[in-house]
Length: 346
Image 1: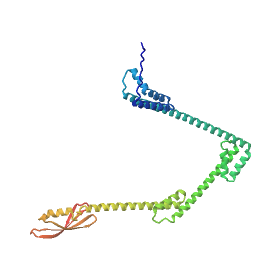
Image 2 (image 1 turned 30 degrees about the horizontal axis):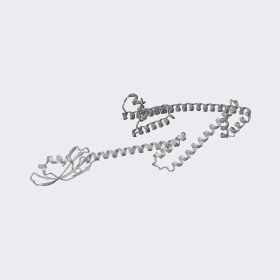
Image 3 (image 1 turned 90 degrees about the horizontal axis):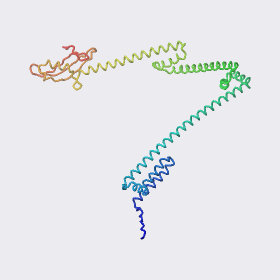
């Protein structure tokens, strides 16, 4: 009896398998590159690549005794990409945070080292200065005293700045007190020189100020008084210009108020008249009410005279008389500035 041998034909290497082999290789290569950043994310991609490969996926389907739905492998690829991206981002964020923390710690250490070095340098400098003063005390004190006596503030200041923190010497302190007094005297002299120069400048400016330029004169004399409070002439001038300025301000305010009042008064007067025909509204109504034939009223002209406390209105019109004829007539009446009737003038 001949032995029968079963030959298993290989899985067809069709176009779909070619596509998934490409996807598998892409995932494996991507995983290999990602491994340099995060080995977990890289291994995930490589593992998922093995799962979706034609060889691996066919074994899984055979083990599960299931079909080969294409969308399952697509979902697996998407899950692989999403999960590995999340793991990689978390790893990158953690690495960045650790690097920032290390940088912060290093910065603190550097700052402390720099501070310690600065302190050590200052201590060394102080010690060196103290040693130098001890070895050259006589010459240093002599040079300091000569600079102060010669009013050489720059040299004296340089010696003071060099030894003031390192030296505790009674004679040095005495010279230092003389230096402080000298510096104050020089500063006062410079301030006085500046004050006198400013007074001269302001006095010169006064020659260009006009007689009615109260504001500029006030400003100059106010500065002069602040520079020389005991000068009675400056104080008198300032008071005079203050008074003149205040009077001018009051006059300007009164003129403005009068102008506003005049404009308001004129506005009230003009409101009594028609802007079209010029007739006085109230006077016209009074005339019509007194006419035999109001419908025949025909306005001719209206004039007025401003009497100060009231206005006198002259209204000329035509109308039918009791005989039916058209006659021309002029009525005169006084009205208040606000438009109220006062009297009729016969």
